[in-house]
Length: 257
Image 1 (cartoon, rainbow, N blue to C red):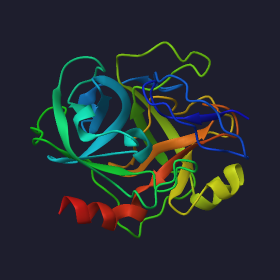
Image 2: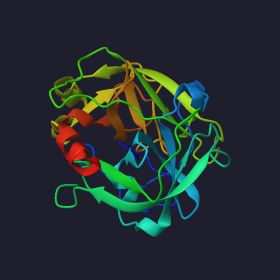
Image 3: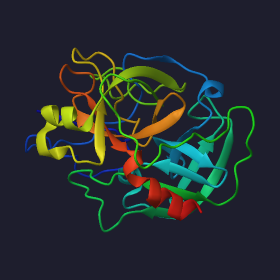
Image 4: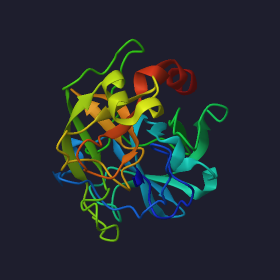
């Protein structure tokens, strides 16, 4: 079984194991089974740049802070990172700002299992909120994700699971039903921890994929998840796995306050 990791081509490390196997990281491109989107409809979405190249997604939680996945920034330094906010397109437009400080749970994040896959980035200057740039709401610490909720996942990731070279310059969106933490364990066993949940269709066909890592999963205007890992993109019985933000609400608040 091949394992997918939602990260771009520039970061080279071993992927998350599923059923005891590991796989190489393929190149990033765009969401599978979704549709083109405009940033004005998802103004919290950002593109994470590493050495000037867009490799992951992220979300705005205040004028000075964004969320992304820990595996997106693992091994990187602040001066390598920037975020592009307020643009529908990967390669142009919007506001591009640097990163002042990387925050992630260094003693807890596991690069082999992707547990604690969350990073909070403090920006070098404040974003200017307006058309296409605003913060997303976060869940309460007690909130849980149940089965069958309608979620929105956005990013510049892969649209064809068999083609890891065609990159979309336009933001994509896909609607996915959520899968609770306990039910998600039926797919991936003990690799699913209490800090994760899933989203996707039993029959496959729609999914996040390589290049979507770090991006938001939103339910009714609230970001409940961060795109993290999974098995082969859009395959039947292989939903995507997301970091559960309610498990980290106190951690996030402690940083941005």
